[in-house]
Length: 498
Image (cartoon, rainbow, N blue to C red; front, top):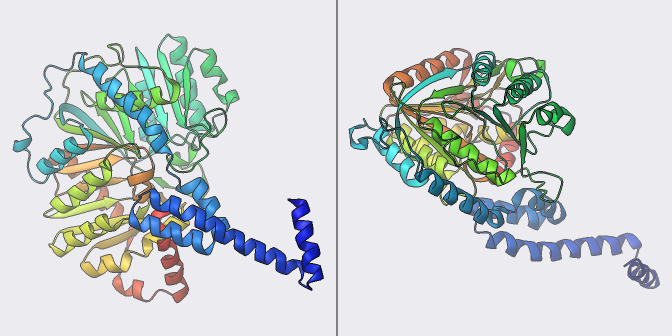
């Protein structure tokens, strides 16, 4: 290659053409060739039309940068891996069918007796996720990590058989060491302990940090590792779930990872506003299933036995569904549930999300609900740790406000809660943001709760947050500086790939 370039250089000199011209010509032609080869690959992926168009434009006008971006962000390699995940899921379900369940908790009990809109949301959730509606549960909501961590640590301390902890982000800080040390203590007592972290979000979890846990007999898994024989260096397809299951009886899920920032110890992010859920009862079995599938995919170890899926008796009044989603699913499960909930709402919709980048179906559902006279309120951060996503989200403000949607930005701290309440009868807490990454690219899990008492509690939390928020007005959106509107519009162009 060097010899060829030298020959081109000498030829250019003989013709009186500068070397800079040759380099520019070669670079330009190389870009066109790269775009010519890569654009058909993007089109054949058959992704959502907006995402395809965005990638084509990026590659066409910035071929080298676009090619690198597509290499690390765009290619959906889950198709190569989905067959294995589907096999694991099918094997898990077959194994669980032979295990005893809770006799006093029938699955999908009298769906027709649920009040609207919960009935239809439940039916859709069953259809797209095969996740049953399970009665007999007790739920508790936490809006700060101090309280949530305390209850999680108490659950670990009381474990008798096993502890399964999964976190997208796991810091090697004070909070991370506290949870690790609790797992170490339980492992020494003979309790099975398993810790699963995402390879990117849990990058601080080093071999040295894990050594006490492994020495005590605990087990560890790293989801889609960055290095090694099964390296998967991609910011997409991450395991964004946050799950703790203890003895198949107690479960936790929601927005909280493991780290000091969640307790407000990092000034940059303080105060941190999040929402997490404690679940007790038969529905914990579904959280256990989600963990077991991810654990087997990561480590190869099967947990589908009577030890890890023992029957759990009813212990509370709540009807619960646990729905998981990911790029390996045939349907965009959580996206479909959210879309259905918005379309079924008759009176009010309260949404809290830290990252708001809706696709066209969700955007239209929000606007249509407002047009029907539904009181639609959206709470988002005033200050975000993902500024590009925030800019993209703000580009949707004016068209939503035009239809009557009310938008609020939290004044202080970082908002990380991911919740929705519909008509005071249906609620969800989970890991999924209202953005395209959660809907299509990451592995998520949400808990759906049916009932007025729980929904009333969630509405109280939402309205209290509004007291610490500033309303966004249509006039303020129209008066934004031109450079701000330009930045938001440019960010919005990238929204399908954010």
